[in-house]
Length: 589
Image 1 (tube, rainbow, N blue to C red):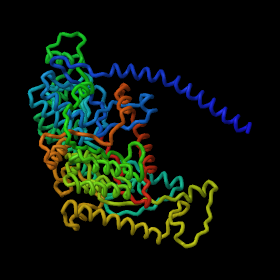
Image 2: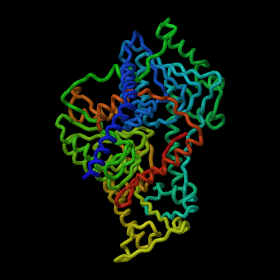
Image 3: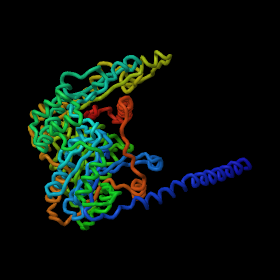
Image 4: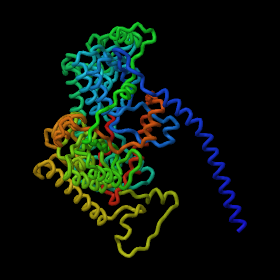
C-alpha cells in the first residue's frame, strides 16, 4: 500500500511539474500568437490599391493540415488556396479600389503545377479585360512563373537577370540497382504495358512504353505553354520553340530583343511603374499583398442552399490515413456526412491525387455513387487525377479537367518484396512450420513461388477488369475501346477529353457553376468546403508568418526525391497489396 501511495504521489507531482513546464514553454508562444493575430488582421484597402501576388507562394487545392508542432515551430511556407486566390482576382476585377495587380517573381520556385497555374491565368486574363493593369517583375524568369507573367501588360526583368525557356523534362529515379546491391528482392504483378509504377524497383531506365507516354504527355503540356505564351506576347509558337532549342537561357537584353519582356529594370523601377498607376506620391509606397486582400473580401453571400467542394488531395491509403493522405474510411465518412446534410444541394469533388490503395479507392467510389443518387456530383481534376484518382472520378456525372491535368493511368500493380538475401548476408535466417504450402504466401523472408505469383496476378487481373468496367459504364464507352486507352497510360487533360475520359476543359469555378446549374439553384447558393479545418487550426495558420524562401540546392532536391519515394513505400498499405497508383512525380523542370 505504501509503495502504491508513493508511486501515485510521484505520478501526481510529475504530472503537475510537467504541466507547469508546458505552461511556461507555451505561454510565450501563445503571447506571440496573440501579437501575430493582431498584426495579421487584414489591412484596409486604400483608394486605387495595387495588389501584389507573390509567385513563390504554394497554391494548393485545400488548406494544409499541419500539426500543432509544425504550426508553433513556424514550419509554414507561403500558401494560398486556389479557390480563394481565383475568387480574390475575380473580386478585384470589379473592385473600384483596385487599380492593378503586381506579379512579384523575385523568389523563384517551381512548386506549382501547370493545371493550377492555368486556372490562375484565366482569372488574370479576365481581370485584364476590365481595363486594369497587370505588371510583372522578376530577378530571373523561370518558365512556370513566366507562364503567369506572360499575361501582363508590362514584364520587367532585372538587368543581370536571366530568362529560362529551355522546355520541360522529367527525371524519374530508379532503385533497382540499390535494391539488388543490398539484397532486397523484388517481384511484381501488374496489368498494362504502360503501367510504369513498378519500373523504379525493376529497371535502371525507362521502358520504351513509359518513355513514349512521358514524351507525349510533356509534349502536350509544352505545346500548351508555347501556344498560351505566344498568343499573349504575339510571338509564333514555332519561334518560341526555336529559342528554347537554340538559346535555352537568355540574358535580359536578348530576352527584350526577342519580345519576351518589355522592360529591363530593378525592383524599385517596377515600384515606380506601380506608383504611376496608383498616382501615389508616398515614398513608402508598397502594394497590398494578396493574402491580406483575400481576408478583406471573403464571401459574405449567405443562402440556405449549399454547394459543397470536397477536396481529395494526396495519396489514397487504406483506413484513416495520415496527414496529407486520403484515408479511405475517413474520406468515405466525409461523403456520408454530405449526403445527410439537407442544405447541401450539390457536391464538387476536387481531385488532386496519383491514386494509391485499390481497396480504399473502391470504398470511396461506392460512397460517391451513393451520394450521386441523392444530389449532383461533379468532378474537378487538379494537377493530377490518375490511377486511383481516376477510379474515384468515375463516380461523378460530369468531369472537368485542365489541359495540363495528368489523368488516366488505368492500370493495376502489386509489389512483392523479400528480404532473404539482405537478412542472410547479415546472419539472419528464418524457419517455418505451416499447415499447407500456401500458408506463408505473405512472407517477406523468401521470393514468391510461381504458384503464388499466379495467385497475385489473378487478383490484379480481376481489379483491372473491374477498373475497365467502371470506366466503360461511367464514360459510356465500349469496353474494348477502354482497353485501348487504358494499359496504365497517362494522358494530358486535353487528350483525355478527345478520347472520352473527360467531359470538359475547365477549372474549379466552372465545375462549381455547373453543379449549381444541375441543382437548379440559379444564384441562390453559398459555397462550403470540406473537410473543414477546425477553428483553432484556422487561427494558428493565419497567425503564423509565412516564409517565402523556398529555394533549395540541387543536392537537397535529389535527396527530397529519395525521401519521397521511401515515404511512398510506407504509404502502400492496401490489405491485398494491390494498387492503383501513378508512381512518378512529374515535377517538370
